Length: 275
Length: 256
Ligand SMILES: Nc1ncnc2c1ncn2[C@@H]1O[C@H](COP(=O)(O)OP(=O)(O)O)[C@@H](O)[C@H]1O
Ligand SMILES: [Mg+2]
Image (cartoon, rainbow over all chains, first blue to last red; front, side):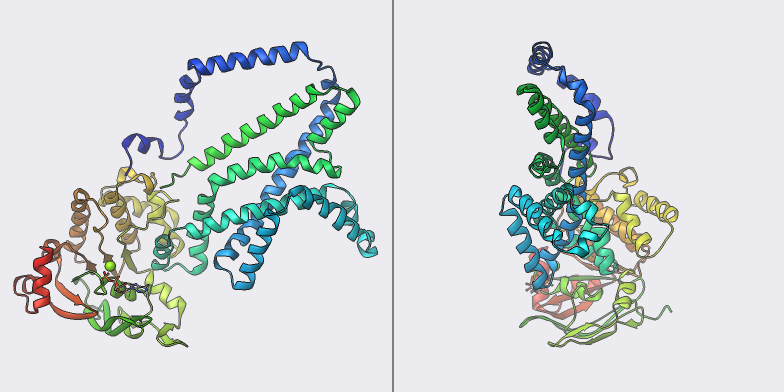
């Protein structure tokens, strides 16, 4: 099946791989890349104008928080919506299946930017026409921009992930479910103990990619006046007349975020070996 | 209690669409019986076994486990359907099935596979389940592998883990469906030797197998299935030493 070496590394999470990887970082081409990176960094710090940075740090921090809130909330809620979307497409009665498939197809087939604007300008204006809504507590939120950013990002993530979950649910080998059934598990138990965790497990590798894509979609909310990190940087550029420094700063932050996400999710994924 | 048959099957029929797979099977396995079921591919061996825990719904006939018949009702489009799901689940939990492809749950470690049913179906305390599971894994020679995942084990190890998973429910009867057919030849022996140990304890089992020498060795009763009927049955020495039906003779010489 597999050789003894992978066998050892695939048992329960161990901390050794991080240590054994260290010498790999010291290979010649890595060292050269590292040097180039350091030279670039030093040059950027020395030759460019970073005087604006301390002044804007509080605002940048708020922007980063907004970006992370948008990312995490839309991923979590979107994933929760994706589960029934995937399940309905695999196992639902035909109206449900049809609805779920239609939803995923429409959302995945249109630009996120368009959806964002439709929610913001369309839904936002619609809500404003009803005095019941205008007078309710919800209006405090609904007249702000971020709820619409959140809705659009969530709907988009749900649609993409719903498609992934459809494949993940459908792909769990029948024999594993049958074994659960043969041991007297109720349908609900079969679902909660085997089918569902197995589907999530199968979907994890693609989830990493989807979350990174989602991170890179968050700046779109700046177009509906949500003050995320990208919007703050845009403001910095307009007031300081600097072009490259703020953009480079943005690149660095998004790279760091992606890196942290990738490492964290890989770790999660590797906890359980696939076939 | 001792004279209630563990498994009693009466006039079992099963058809898939218009394909008649089982055509009137009657079979009784008493406690401690080890019934080997042999027959050519497509003769209905798996279907018979899967009817016993209702993974397949019989078209007609009656099945009783430990004297308790499954409650069935007539289905709208012919055949039978389960009348009391709870009863079926309760009985299933005590009929351990070992599959040709192991069917371990790959998102759980070996130990977690073994404690899954005791905890989540039988309601056993976790500590107790773990304690028993560790004993059982030692028994099948996997004591040191309890924390690894099935995907990184050999087929023989996976099948032994699957047997431990069945033993963990302390089954009334064990159903084996060609437990060694998916294994590389050099791994067959380790699984057969575990089954041989269980046979020596007089555990009730129904064993579908193509390992004729093994069947002759451990079985108390052999059933030869052909085209959905029991063509011949009897003690192993008679079935293998003095087969009557020409088909059985031919079958034995073809697999020997
Ligand atoms: N779910 C099913 N649907 C339709 N036909 C089936 C199904 N399961 C088994 N069969 C058919 O029933 C016959 C007996 O199958 P099976 O019991 O698996 O035989 P065996 O285990 O003896 O090889 C075969 O012809 C097979 O194609
Ligand atoms: Mg078979």
